[in-house]
Amino acid sequence: MDMWIKLQILMSFCDSVEVRVRIPAGCCELVERGDITGGLEKLLVCWKVHRQCTYKYSKDLTNCLDQTAKCYAMLGHFRKSVLCLELCLPAVEEQFGPNSIELANELQKVTDVMICELQQIPPHSHKFIKNNVTCAIGATSLLGNKLPSAGFKW
Image 1 (cartoon, rainbow, N blue to C red):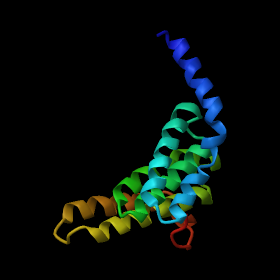
Image 2 (image 1 turned 180 degrees about the vertical axis):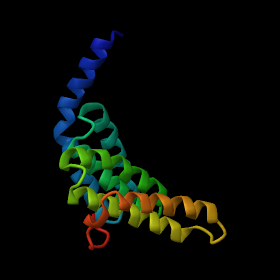
Image 3 (image 1 turned 90 degrees about the vertical axis):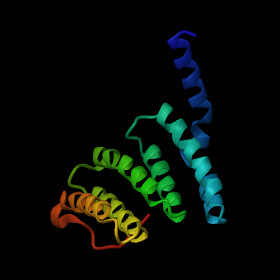
């Protein structure tokens, strides 16, 4: 099949599902009812559609990734949560600027989840701890004194 035809099919698909994937309300409802795994599955589908149909720094894609990270953290999969949050950082920087409080809040989330991950690992894993602490310190030092004092927020 010609590449142009594939692109047209994808764009028509995106136009038809845009309203459904814009706000993953069904996903959030599942999570609120305690079905975190079900909500996560829907969020992952939503994320795949957004990746194909929207701008890579779109707010909808960022919100979807943020909710996905939240679900992973609730399930105790902190490494996957960190990966999702790290994917959000360039979009937040693009939307709000490199010295914005919004970026500082995102960096705070990343470091909070990294700390949760560190608390789960055995104490004899010193190399792993050193690498994560170095990443966390590097992420928080990017903005210097501009980091918010508030705790972990979604």
